[in-house]
Structure formats: C-alpha cells, structure tokens
Amino acid sequence: MDIVLTIEDVSKNFGGISAVKNLSIEVEKNKILSIIGPNGAGKTTVFNLLTGFYKPDKGRFRYGELDITGFPPHKVADIGIARTFQNIKIFPWMTALDNVLVARQLRERTGLFRSMFRTAGLIKKESSSADKAMEILKHFHIADKFDFQAKNLSYGDQRKLEMARALATEPKILLLDEPTAGMNSNESEECVRVIYNIKDKLGITIILIEHDMNIVMHVSDKVVVLDHGEKIAEGNPGDVQKDKAVIKAYLGEEFIAYAENQ
Amino acid sequence: MKKNISLAILAIVLLVLPLLFQSRYTQHILNMILIYVMLGISVNLIFGYIGALTLGQAAFFGIGAYTAAIISTKLGLSFLPCVLCSAVMGCLAGFIIGIPTLRLKGPYFAIATIGLNNIICIIFLNWEHLTGGAVGISGIPYASILGLQFDTERKVYFLLLVSVFLIFLLYRNMISSHYGKVMIAVRDNELAASAMGIDTAKVKVIVLAISTTIAAIAGAYYAHITNYVAPDAFPVMESITFLIIIVLGGAGFKYGPIYGAVVVVILNEYLQYFEQFNMLIYGVLIMILLLFLPSGIAGIVEIAKAKYYEKKKIYYLKEVGIDEMK
Ligand SMILES: Nc1ncnc2c1ncn2[C@@H]1O[C@H](COP(=O)(O)OP(=O)(O)OP(=O)(O)O)[C@@H](O)[C@H]1O
Ligand SMILES: [Mg+2]
Image 1 (tube, chains in turn orange, cyan):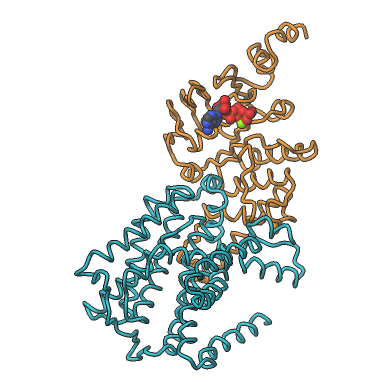
Image 2 (cartoon, helix red, strand yellow; image 1 turned 30 degrees about the vertical axis):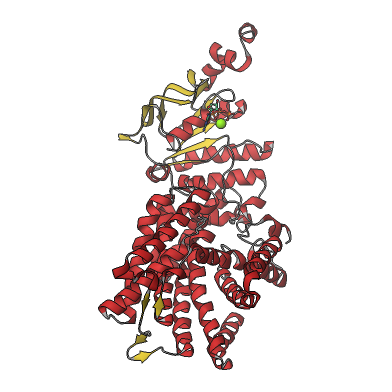
C-alpha cells in the first residue's frame, strides 16, 4: 500500500461550529477516494484546509514525507495538488482556452521580462503551451468551444472546464468537489468516465466529494463518511453502504431496522 | 497587410501632427497628451489589469519628477541617467509600498494610496534642503541626448512620441502575453488564480512596481520639459485625473490610456474657460459618460469593431451592459 497523502488528526472550528473534528485519513496512490456525508458535514472544509485556503486549528497534512500544513494555496498547487470548487470559480470573462493557459503558467513559466520583449523563445513556448492547453480541452470534449467566453458555456461545460484547468497544472492528486452537480445524466455519465480515465490513464490520485451515491459506489476504491465534521465510517463502497452509523446519519435512526430487514 | 497600411498611416499622422499646428499652445497640448498616455498606461496596468484601485499614482509621478530634478540640478547628470534614476526610484517605491498595502482589499487599498499620496506631498513640502519646499526646484535643464537639445515644444514632441511608443510596445507585449492572462485571472478571481498555482501577492506587487516605474519615468520627462517642479503638481486630485483617464478610456483595454488621455487633456483645457464652474461641469460630464459608457471609449470601439467584422464574441468586456449589446 502506497500512501501519498496523510491527514493527521485535523480539526477546524468556525466560531462555535466544529466543521472538522479530529479527522484522520490516509489516501492511497492512484486510487479514487470518495468523501461523502450530509450537507454541512465538513467535506468542502477538508479541501479548503488541505489546499491552504484555511489554516487547521490542529493536526497536520503530510504529502509523502513532506509536511505541507500551512502551505499557501499556490504552493500546494505547485507541489502537485490541484482542486475544483463546489461553486464554480472559472475566469468568466476569458475564453475557455485562456482559462487553461492561466493554469499552464505554473509549469511553463514564460516569465515577465521575456514577455515584455517578446523574444523568439517566448513565442515558441507560448505556442507549445497553447497546443497543450487545446489537448487538455479535447480530453474533456470542449475543444470545439475553445474561443467561447467561459461564462457563455453551459453549466456542465463550465464544470468540465474547471477540471481541465486543474489538470493543466499537472497534479499528482486531484481534488474534485461535486464535479457532476448540475449536470444532466448524459453529461454526468461522461464526466464519470473522464474521472476514471484520469486515474487510470494518467495515474493521478483522486479525492472525490460526490452526492450521487450511484457514482460513489461505482467509481470509489475507498469511501470516507463524514457527519458533523467527524469520520463515522470508512471502507470499501459495499461495506460503507451497509454501515449502521451511515444509514443513521443519512436517513435517521428508524431506517436502521428497515435496512437490516432488506 | 491591411493592418500594416493603417499603422503606416497612423505613423505619418503622428509625425506630421506637430507641423500642422503652429501655435506653441497646441503643441504643448499634444505634449501633455503624450505624458498622460504614459500615466494612463501606468494606471491601466495596476487598476485595469490587476483590479487594484489606486488613488495615489501622482505620488510616483512626483517621485520621478523630483528625482530627476534633484539629480540634474544638484549632481549635474544629463537627461538619460536622470530618467534611469527616476525609473529605479519609482520601481523601488512601488515595491516598498506595494508589499504592505496590496494585501488590503478593495477600498482599503484605495484609501491607503490616498494616504501615501498625501505623505509624499508633505515630504516634498518639508524636506526643504533637498526639495526646495513650497518653492520647489527650478532651473532643471532641457532634456538633451547626444548633444541634441529638446528645447522647443516641437522637439519635445518627437522625444515624447518615441518614448511613449517604446513604453507602449513593452506594455502591449506584456498584456497580450500569457503573463497578461495571469494578470486578468488575478483580477477576476484571486482565489481561483491562487488554486492554479499563481502567487497572486507576487504578481500584484510586480505589476505595481512596473506601473510605478512608468509613472516615475513620466515624472522625469515632466521635470525636464517644464524645467520646474513644485509640490502642488502632485496632489491626490492629480491621481484622480489619472484614474479618470483610464475609466473614460476603458480600464483593462489596451488602447484605453490613449483614448482617455486625448479626451481628458482636451476636456481639461476647454473647461478652463468656465473658471469656477469647471470642476462642476467636469464632474457632471464624467458622470454622464460613465452612465452611458461603462467600459469607456475602448468598449465602444470594441463593439464597433465586432460589428464591423461580424465577430460573434467580444472578449474581456467586463461590464454587463456592454456585453449584452452584442
Ligand atoms: N468560512 C466559513 N465560515 C464559517 N463557517 C463555515 C465556513 N466554511 C464552512 N463553514 C461551516 O462549516 C460546516 C461545514 O461546511 P462545509 O462547506 O465543509 O460542508 P459540506 O460537507 O461541504 O456541505 P455541502 O454538502 O453542503 O457542500 C458548515 O456548518 C458550514 O456552515
Ligand atoms: Mg461542500
């Protein structure tokens, strides 16, 4: 078992609310780990802590040997952890292609002074960067819309663009916060296929927050269930589905007996 | 090809322009427009492309002007070394001021820059043995390069034209490169930009330093053209004028500084005839223009171009009103 990321006893409070409490998770390399839980369980907060948008009150994040607790967001992206946002955060006034080009800058680093003097090297590098960006858009089947302003894309395409942009930073770990939210069933099916391919073909580890249980059960290698910021269950999809605590958190006490009779 | 022809025509017009006007006054106006284009570029970088509202850019204009004035009168250095020193001072000042203030969001940054502008003016006024206090520094020599003296408005025009052209070229290269897209990303969604691995604080400080360098260079030219600097040339009101250039010309548009500088300089000159009413009329005019042109003149040009070429998409137009018109 090859662990790429360890979340060690992390807690985060907002005022009186304990959004994440004593959470420990081990993330295995080249697997899909899903985090599920009712609304307000603290799933998005885990992403925000991990990517440096919030500082944990307690606990550590380890990326391999490296302690990345307290790294600012841009450094987290630099070491190879990319994310998407639950409430889409594309650059609305830019074209789809330019959205991806911005993300490519992390690896291309064309540099300000070369840009100002528009050297031959810069022109070459920018055009190869654009080729790579188009390649990534093709991956997500939105290459034909490369020159659309991002805000004019359909909701589903905007979600895909966000994933394309995250992938353009060449991550080792990809954090997806409800990637299929707002997609119709066709789009959602296609999206799941793409996610699976990212893991399978590119060897990227994925942490997925997802409300659609069909998707979770279908693609996950491991599932972690949060409720009120605490981990109440963990295991392979089949076991978690039968777990009493999980049923209680999702449906209430009275459903346990019902589930047992099934 | 078509583009080359229109560029050639533009170049000829710009070169012939000062010869068409015989009066020194008109030539002076042309020169002011060119200085204001530099300042417009400076404000467009930090406000138009990074989104940091600055009301203190006159401070850096003043730092450049005073640096050139002091170095040329006290040390006797010639024009180009003076411009270089002003540029270095402007750049340093940009870094020193940007690092603490650019953390401030929205209106707080604007207020900090107002404070900065006032502090710099107080320093100009009170550091008498260096700045000459309220009297200022006079006797700044005309610009001269390789023995060529720029001692008439017409000669100054050509000096400015070449300088503005070079600055515009660097500015254009910068904003149309991928780095320029990074700047827009920082403006439009700082959180998302940082999640893409962009060190947003660093980008902002660097762009501010470039912008203040350009303002300081404009200051050095100003000192050598007017032969005189005094504290009352760099108040917050002047910073507001620079901002108006960009808002009217089109913030975040490449040619915004040019359109804005032309309109604002000419407007300022005409409104002088109205004496005590000039600020009132100026204010009302600007309000009307902004109500009807939320993206400035560049926004209108962009729409006209899109219509002409029947392009379906208009990129980067920020204001909803304009965007919906397409
Ligand atoms: N910045 C914040 N300030 C205050 N409270 C916050 C903040 N972010 C999250 N919270 C609170 O922390 C708790 C966990 O929120 P979080 O967004 O992580 O839930 P979630 O599991 O992602 O829910 P959902 O499924 O609705 O997306 C909630 O009670 C939320 O109100
Ligand atoms: Mg959430």
